[in-house]
Structure formats: C-alpha cells, structure tokens
Amino acid sequence: KKSNNISQVANFIAAWDSFLLIGHEDPDGDCLGSIFSLGLLLKDLDKEVKIGLYKPLNDKYAFINNNLGLDYFIIDESTKINDNNAIIALDSSDSKRLGPAKDLLNNNKVLNIDHHIDNKHFGDLNYISPDSAATGQIIYEIADYMKWKINKDIAYYIAVAVLSDTGFLRYSNTDRSVLQLIDQMMAKGVNIYEINRDLYGRENPKTLKLIGRALNNLNILEDEKIAYLYLEKKDYEELDADYEDKEGIVNFARDIDNIEVGILFNEEDDRIKVSLRSNDYYPVNELAAEFGGGGHPNAAGCGINMDLKTAIEKVINKAIEINQDLRR
Ligand code: 5GP
Ligand code: MN
Ligand code: MN
Image 1 (cartoon, rainbow, N blue to C red):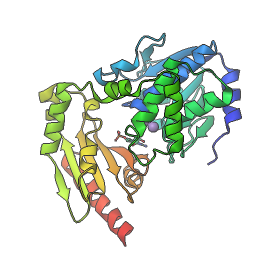
Image 2: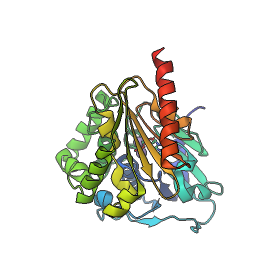
Image 3: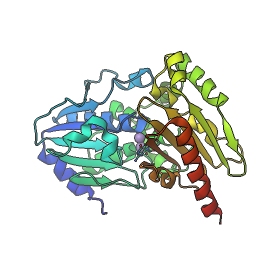
Image 4: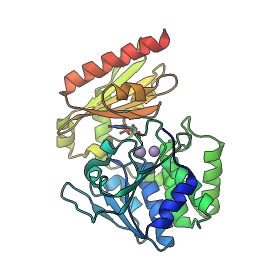
C-alpha cells in the first residue's frame, strides 16, 4: 500500500471549507495534540473546524482544551452529520479504532494521517509516515511544507503530541529530527517544562492507587523475559477510577531489568484491553495482530472478548511462542 504524497494532502485541504477532525479511542497526547494543532492551523486558514471525540476529556487531558477557540463535541452511535463532508482521521491505524465515528466514513471524504506502520489505509486519501515519531510530527511537516504560520498555541499542541509519543524524548523513536522539531517549537515560545507538568505532574491520587493495585498484580516470567500486570473491574469500581487512568502503567512492567516485553491486561465492561510494550528486539505489534490489534513494534495493543483469566493465558502463551521463534 502506497501513501499519498504531501501535495495531494494540500489539494484535499484546499478543496474543502469545513472539516471534522477525529482520532482513536482512548486518545493519548499524540492523538489530541495532532487534532488540536491541525484544528488551529485550519482555523487560521478560515476553514470551519469541528472536533469529534467519543467521550468528554478526562481529568488527565482536561488541559488540552484550554479555550483557544476550539471546542469538541461527542460522537456517539446516534451522531449524524450531513453526507459529503471532509473528515480527517489522526493517529488512527485502523477504522476499528475510530469508535462510533467509523460509521461516518462511508458517506464522507476521508483523509487519514498517521504514523503507524500497520495503518490499514481506510481513507480516500492516506498520508502515512511510519518514520515519524508521532502524528504531531507529520502535522509539523505538513504545516512547514504549506508555509502555514505556526503560532505559540499551535507549537504547544505539536510539542505535546511529539513529547507524548517519544516518552518525553526517551524512546527509540527520538532522533535528531525530533530534537530539531522541539527546538523549533521552543523558538515559538513553548516551555517544555510546562508540558512535562501538564502530562505527568497533575496525577489524580486515584491513579496512584490504581498503579499500586497493578503493581500488586505483577507477574514475572524471567526465562521468557516477559512481565505482566493486570487490573480487574473491581479495582476501578473500588477506586472510582476510569479506564483512561491506566495510561502509562504498562511501562512499569517493560522497565524491569532483564525484561523485554511488558503487558497490562485491563478488565473492562465488554472486553479485555491489552497494552503491550517492548524494549528491543520483540515486535509487539505482531503479538497484538494475533488478537486483532496492532500498533508499533515497541508499543501495541488489542481488545479481546474473553474473560480475564483466559485472555491472560492465551496472550502469554502466544507471547512465549513468538519469543522462542525470535530467539531461535
Ligand atoms: P495503548 O497500550 O497505550 O492503549 O496503545 C499503544 C499503541 O498500541 C497505540 O498507540 C496504538 O498504536 C496501538 N493500539 C492499542 N490498542 C490497539 C487496538 O485495539 N488496535 C490497534 N490496531 N492498535 C492498538
Ligand atoms: Mn495514539
Ligand atoms: Mn501516535
């Protein structure tokens, strides 16, 4: 599958006056930063912009919507928009990840902008750049190519996106182009210490208690270099926590000495959500793909319709099998 080129993206944007921006379920900082930076860029071109999310922003990401003239509405199963609109999907590898918005794709023109290597090219136009560390980096590239003015607010959202997906410049996707981008954003007035506080320095105490529960459920398969954690529905109920509060918890499993793969099993209402991370040689997107999911080689996930115990058993067995193949 071939990606469209940037001038086709330019033509698409020039051809429409009004855009609906959407991203993946449980949006992370890259998804939200991409949506809001592109939203501001399009508004500066006098385009009409709507942002659709599937749930109100939770406390962790409340800072994203800081009254810069962009608001969002909630897309659910009953949402209707007039047909023949322009939709831009951001940071979403698969239309299955678009929640209730996937039903809107058929009757509208869709531009799919993403950096997942396993992107399913579900758009009418697909601008896919697997070498980009974040979708926010692609937004920067597009803005730069089009010579759109990046003001401080736009720079802030682009930096939030890129800093989120690089683990604040610690992951293997942090290369010189990322550092150059951050330098450019700082030149526009962005303070990355503030972003550090926004992303990691405003934890809800409930989240810390949830981390405690997950760490209590730590299992290490030393010979297999796999560590996993799990959270049960009752943990969320007892702490009055949200599923979004689990973000980042899987990293504790990945960051153990001598561990290659970290896994978090999250028991949700209608599925087990599995988060997968690896350090080095293990492509966890291949493990996720075995269960209908996907992602990046070092960060992937899937949703499984089984009970928690069965899901753990199946995924761990598959994880071990793949690990043995890799080491053979
Ligand atoms: P997380 O574990 O933080 O939910 O997701 C990590 C990464 O895995 C995401 O950025 C996304 O690329 C991918 N991912 C997570 N869940 C799914 C899923 O259900 N399907 C697909 N295709 N990718 C997923
Ligand atoms: Mn994402
Ligand atoms: Mn991303």
